[in-house]
Amino acid sequence: MSEEVNAPEEGQGQDVGLSYQDINAAIQVIDIVSARGAIRGEELVQVGTLRERFVAFLRHAQSQGEELGFDLPASSLNPPEEEAPAEAAE
Image (cartoon, rainbow, N blue to C red; front, top):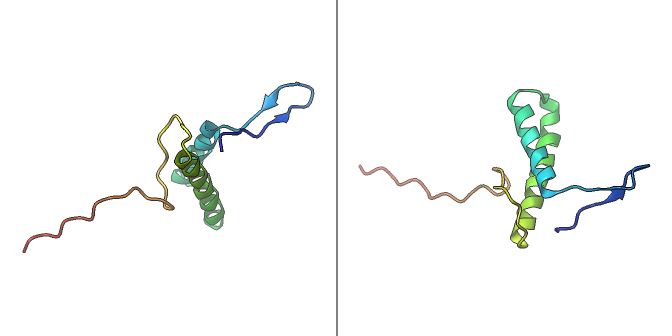
């Protein structure tokens, strides 16, 4: 999972790659543009699915022992475990 996808840039001779930080940045962009209402209703499922795939990829990498260097974003796929609220005493 720690491997980067590299392809030579035409005429540059340099490798380009995609890092965990790049994927995290894409998740943040999705969150920002959706909060600002920049995504149309008919696009929400596709954009949300892409976001969840990114988050799942990062969670998998972390579960394999990869050090991401940042906290994972919130996700509806794997919400953080929370204690159930205590029932009110009557």
